[in-house]
Amino acid sequence: MKSAKPERPAGLPSGATSEAIVNALPHPVFTVDGDDKLVGANVAAEAFFEASLAVLVRHRLQEFVPFGSPLLSLVDQVRTRGSAVNEYRVDLGTPRNGGERIVDIHVAPLNEAEGHVVIMLQERTIADKMDRQLTHRGAARSVTALASMLAHEIKNPLSGIRGAAQLLELNASDDDRSLTRLITDEADRIVKLVDRMEVFSDERPIEREPVNIHAVLEHVRTLAASGFARHIRFIEEYDPSLPPVLANRDQLIQVFLNLVKNAAEAIGDSTDGEIQLTTAFRPGVRLMVPGGPARVSLPLEFCVRDNGPGVPDDLMPHLFDPFVTTKPTGTGLGLALVAKIVGDHGGIIECESQPRRTTFRVLMPMYRGGRATEKS
Image 1: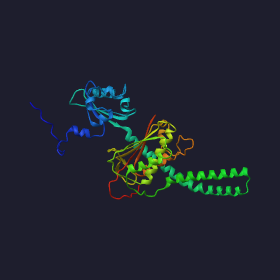
Image 2: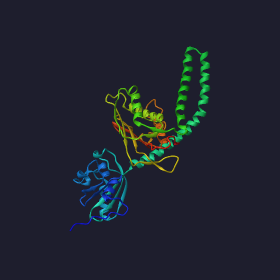
Image 3: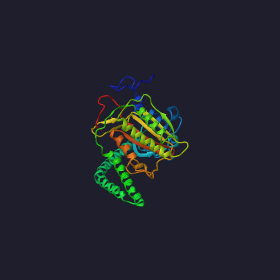
Image 4: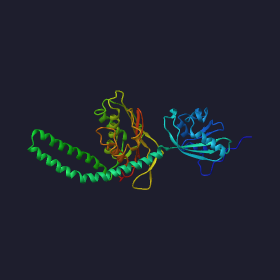
């Protein structure tokens, strides 16, 4: 006797099967049988494990997770209790899937098949990204207040110090003249530093328009290749179908010029230095932006990747904070300024770093028509 097809719930279009619904989920979902053998997986799970369904079903779960992973004990626990369990912030990273992969795990029994369990993973990357972005914005606000104070309390006295040094220089001996010049040079250096910080206190609305990101990146590459990165090989991997980004072109140039310069300085004098510029469309990331309650989609991904030594682990949590730098002569304001500009555009910037593979990833909203000028 031929089995009847499962009825489709009312309201769903023709062809919207349970399999299609599960495949539409952005989170990895997969099923294992009583022997921990994978028997089903959605598209997101194939991407997470970097293996097709045909490959996955030939293996047991132990072959795709770290040795002794808590996930294995969670599966056993679900079978014993017969109820769902959750575990948060578990590392499922292996050499197969590219290192650290922090996830929240949800495991539930499949009552229709004895011993079978369904596992859903929720990667912490995006959640942590949102948390860190709020931290970056808080850091930018603290620099804003500091910049306003410095402009008033430091620049005016510096002007008087510089003027006095110039007057002393008129009647100074040759030996003393070198000291007065040192005073004026140092005063000018401090003024330049304060001027850089005053950018943080600029709260004027950003003039935005649809911008071709590839034209911006090509301009930045040309500037870099003819100057500070002339000894470095550039690799470009662009999605030509990418829609425009709603942004200020000059500020985008400043963002990516800072990121490329940062990458070039990390590479140093290495003879095999490479900087990779990539663009891609990544639907699914949404973020609450300043100025309204609505969540904005950030599907445009722009990356600057270098093969330098990487960012020290102790520096990573504070990378976008002001005055944080590994350079002997750096001010630590470059990446803080980048974070502010990206945040003002309603976007996200994130860094992932391993030796010889450091990636700065910028997620931005795309242009959807309507007004080109908006207040951030």
